[in-house]
Image (tube, rainbow, N blue to C red; front, side, top):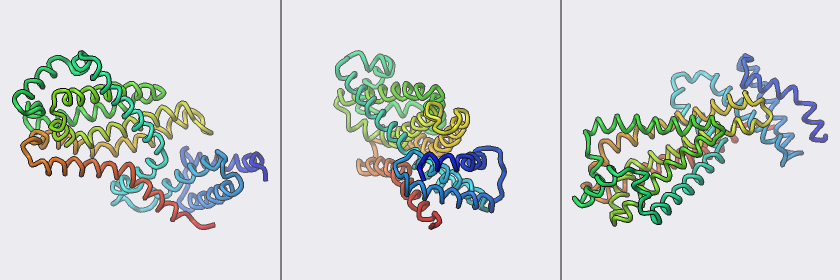
Length: 325
């Protein structure tokens, strides 16, 4: 059967699937399971005869969404919170993995621009960070503690204030994606330029490793979460720019729902980063080097595993659970 004929023959059925998944159409678990089997049959046929066609991507997307909807109908109320982080979010992250990649590529590109700008423009750091911050840090460096600024207020006060600020940054990075993704692009650009120039400033003052030991105790999770949140903003923007077979409004609804779930998953990491910045970073240069390095590597490994490795593991398990045809 030609691909055009295959699409024409099943188009109405797939639109019904969309309504069952994304619309207000209510289906009981048995009906959902039946729809899933039909959809898997169509996906298998398309993979066999039209392996390079966009219809395969479309059907695979519907199948993954329907699978998640069926999964939610099971009696897992007691484990709903756990299932959200261990199954639902990883599957969504895997589905949108290219946007996570885009966010990382933009991050490193913009970070490099910040470093180069600070290197070749002697006034750049002050224009970005402000004279007060730079002057205070220079004084701290002379006193032998480049990261003493993290001791400028009480631990609890720092934790609450920093966490709220980081959540605000994350929300902006994400929600600015509604401006076709360009808002997220510009906001990420600004933050990366600031980070790059900030880190180069310490390098220029010959206290680079001291700054690394202090800043990245909390920064590993804080910055990583910021990148993921930027990826969420890109997903949101792409759902408007590239609606695929959906209407633009339905595509936006899907993009918002999926990206918001990923965004929610970053909040525990953001809070943990705020805790470390408020209670631990202030002792970074006083604690043994091995302990600081262990904290940095542990936090970076944890969040990297969750967003870069675990989604592939969950997706592999999900594919094994697909019914054989």
